[in-house]
Image 1 (tube, rainbow, N blue to C red):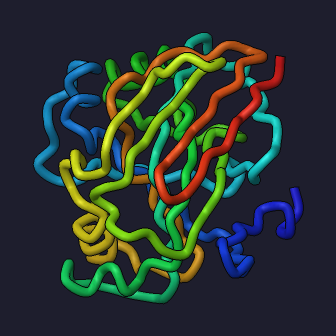
Image 2: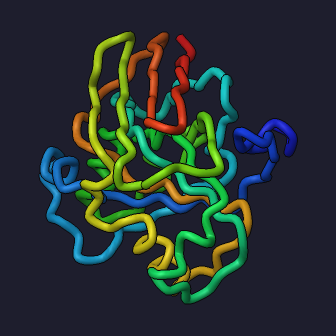
Length: 221
């Protein structure tokens, strides 16, 4: 996939940004942590994906073959707009260039086996095509009021609000910047609400976030 294919287009101006590092936050909604039987985190749970995980808006999502239980996790995605290190929570919003939607795809059976052995999650979370992106917008009125929905073939599976995050977007930016230098184009997948579940080959997965829009991801059969 070429660099051009991966460009993120910010609406309404149409400005294009090439993605950088991909940070993902696990267990950032209490309801989701509890549905998987996980303890609530006292600090953000962070893992990363490579650009091989990204798919542009409109691309068909390849179905992975090294696991059997592929699950959807609909998420708000934050696009970083300028370089920052040790960012204060009060300044964090000034580092945001855009707000988008995406899927953090997870091979749950593979992840469960890895967790039993205390092993890293990469092969369950960071495989090719595991982070397809949808629409992005430059501004929203209030992040905490954004509403997230995920439908599978027309059936509502996930429904939540960003105000229910354990760690807010400014807190995530501040925390990450204390460990990593954040740079223009970096992405933060901010966690998913409850209702995660299986995807099958041929499914149509529609992710909607108020003020941003909606994208339907089609999975190869």
